[in-house]
Length: 96
Image (cartoon, rainbow, N blue to C red; front, side, top):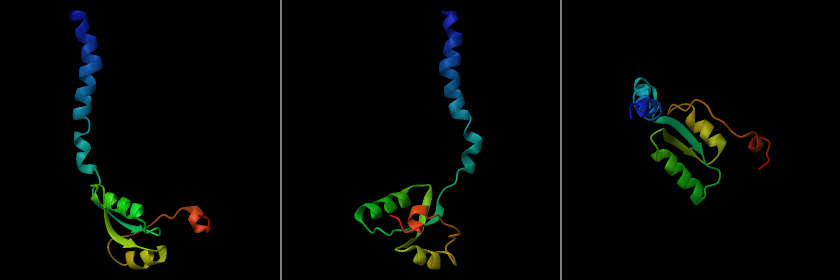
């Protein structure tokens, strides 16, 4: 029975203890409620549902909803903490 304690401690107990204690110092560094702007060109029920789900998550907070990229750039930059954006290259070139 003593021979089983070593492997049990290494393969079962050590990962459990490591998984509980290792993340503790980093919990304060997790980003929460990052303000984002969403440009919704589609305006479908699915896209609205995605934006609502995104806003309900604890990671981000939707502070601006726009219908076009130009509208989002005009309304988002001067206020509300919107500082940058990404737009897929295939949409920039006019290819859908």
